[in-house]
Length: 156
Image (cartoon, rainbow, N blue to C red):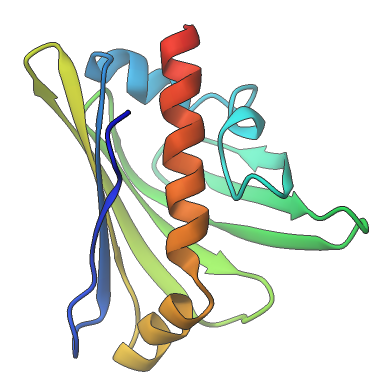
């Protein structure tokens, strides 16, 4: 299985996550924008995911909720700004537990010899906001999600 790479440079406001998937971009795009499939791959392995809203279009909103074993909920959401199937989408990303800390995420899918290079760049409002995600081990959730996505793509 390919590894998920993170680019987290000191003093910058962004986090870049990169993964190569053994599926063409149209399939990857369909899976990452299908509200029925999101719960099968999105979030850390120790949390369940519920999709409350997913309007994949410019101006459309999204809201996903992670649920732990005790029933506590952790909600994330935002607004899609651009959707260009099967190449990319741009959306805001906000954890409801820290309202006002909004990141802008661009996901780009590039064909590479029958596979897809997935690049997600999240730009945070400040270095401090970005570093808070790093301290909260956001990479773990990203890595778990990418591993689960790779498994799902292999099944499809």
